[in-house]
Length: 333
Image (cartoon, rainbow, N blue to C red; front, side):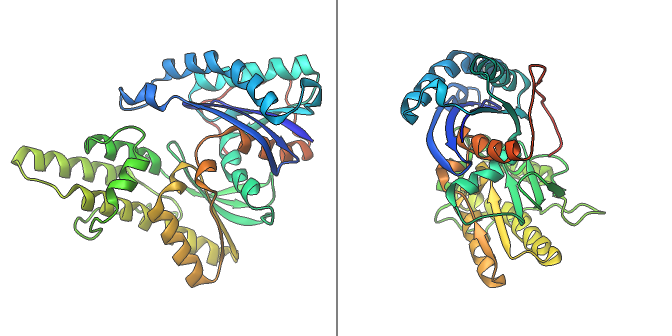
């Protein structure tokens, strides 16, 4: 089964063709990162307009790269929530038009479910049930993945997402947007014990997280140093910050795996590309004798292939949408 899949929830326009939920025939991506870098973050109106300008061209390019014609498409999948509402609307409306014109089923896919499914593309042996930590610019969620379409949120951030903290920390350090990779590179060789940052805890649910205090602590440290004319060890600051994020994510995930009796841990989303977080998860899972699955770097960020992968399993579960499908800025997993 060949699925034509669309992703446009933020600042990447992506169109992919995925076969049987596990094989990527093509994954065409146009990143707007350079367009938004001058503003230090994503400008929703610019993002929406860029999606409009590129999605049709990418669609034609995807069919050609996959070596198929329109008649070979068996279904259309699209990420319909959550995300920047104008950006999501572009993908949803284009996908609805494609499904109608091709007379094939339209499959709505939750963006975070797509990130989780990215691992299916990289690891054919991976099957639910497992525990997954989805970490990105807009979400930080600990998920009990019982089946391909049966998931329960165990814990989530109560405020800022981990990825947002990376972007804000990068901005205050004068690093380019998006901030994940620059901070990762800067932190190499830094002393992660030089600066002490808070790790948020939430009363009532040990799996819930909070990153606003960490973000504020970094901003205050940098601003106070600037006001006093003191020089900061930027590499050590980046390393200490990354350690604080990892120390918030990894122990909670390991605790959940033990309490739920899982032997498989999956990490997904853009922040999963961070080398420190990947290494800490590897060490923790080796110590606990758990299987660990982390997607390759090219599948950590937003892409169309992950939507096609999850779309396949949504299709098998009977999920369909009609011409009344809408886009949503927020939606529970």
